[in-house]
Length: 434
Ligand code: CMX
Image (cartoon, rainbow, N blue to C red; front, top):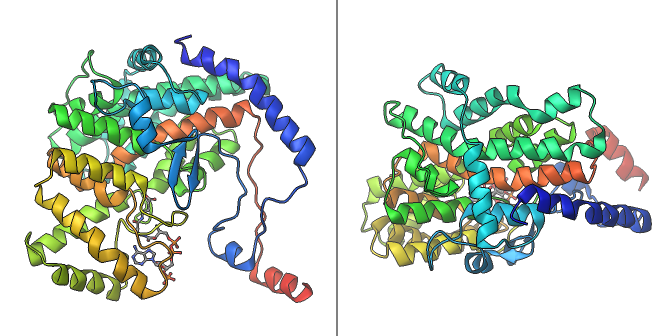
């Protein structure tokens, strides 16, 4: 079938049975334990959540439904021969677990196109915001204003049986994903281009249309946007944006509400906002030292950042312990498309300088770059120079992963999330007894 929903519906019964069996036969087995340190330290390393769409290996990085990023670049359908994958193909993979054919990916493009019209009131909500409102706040607000049309919320109100929840959650998720490029582009054009909006192109795919509606038509830029939208989609379940979406969704808040929660988390500087922070930091370097910075000057700059009590943005990770393959894939793209671009060369130099310094601090668990260290370079090269917008591009992509998992969470009947918290006194009491 080339119908995404039909293909998904076929997969659900077997996965429901699989989960039931897992629970019945192995429900009491231990996956790991929780130390005092983990409870205090942001629950690091506690395997306490089910997430089907992707899995992160500390050494190797992310795999989407079992496929690494280089594998996806090879296997997923593309808009042009030898080019980058289209995110619609990844959406099919995340939803169904299977790499789609070109026809299947094209059917997703068409389905999204049909749902892409953004209601007028959303533009009015955007227009009413303070002109200094951060683009991520605008994104979350626009998404919340779409919630009035939630099919899941309506179905719940009318008493739908819980075994059918996944269906309107799928509908809401597709409606929302379809509208996100138009909303993001409107935020971009309103904030930086005087509100002069660009119509969608009926011949472009979902990711390329985002660049097009922002006002960028260069073929390289469209390819970059397809790749960008593919690689930022999912990073297993425990990161702030995915976990926030999952947690809020577990209360049966609809996809608009739960994704908006994810986006307010992505807007934090230790998470998705890091791509904005990297660019600002690189701009500081260039202003203070110039483009012909030496390694020694770079070292001094990095140390000065650390000594002033700030993080080096774009480096480190809570789970990864090696260079992020999302970084590597963007570095490969840059080497191919912009080998002499000064910002690319500066970023490549950082790769030589920063890890050793972070190792020297003796406390950073992963001294290597993450996804956010490179994405701004690609965007700048194609003229998307407004770094306060970068996290919105991350957020649009993130919808593909967190909303696909949201559909599966309802299909699998996952319960409301409710971990146990303790006071310091309660922890002291427990360790005294142990
Ligand atoms: N620069 C300076 N110090 C860093 C650092 C960095 N890039 N990465 C970690 N550290 C510090 C931590 O702040 C912590 O210091 P304290 O003990 O003084 O509090 C110490 O090293 C240990 O931290 P860790 O266990 O290595 O890292 P965490 O799991 O606590 O945090 C992360 C992970 C990503 C928040 C952290 O590496 C960081 O702040 N990086 C910079 C921001 C960034 O790039 N975030 C984007 C991550 C990817 C994404 O989500 O988009």
